[in-house]
Image 1 (cartoon, one colour):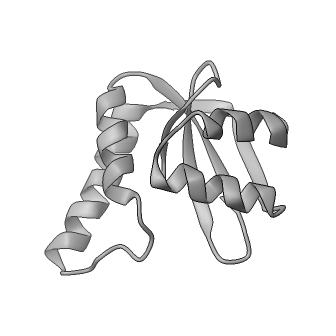
Image 2 (cartoon, helix red, strand yellow; image 1 turned 180 degrees about the vertical axis):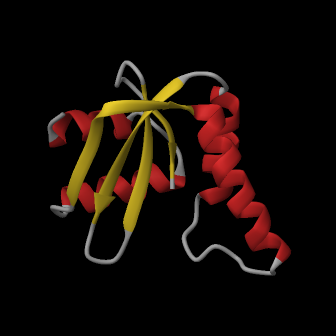
Length: 109
């Protein structure tokens, strides 16, 4: 996947995190889409919702916005398979979950 395609996918999403990822990509951030494997969104939801719950129980507020929204969106995706991607800028690393047909962003944090 090239930078322009990833930017196009993210531009059609309205979450706070995807807007931040777009800014990072436009500024030249590195990115990697792991096209060799997919995972069930529900499995990823289980992992990330557990982390979110543990943070909240310990009184820790995530330092990066978007975790709660990403957890909700992974849950809503259910049994859909997703690709994972990262975008790494100078100040932040983003984790993206892209639909199996690589046409939309399922969740981003």
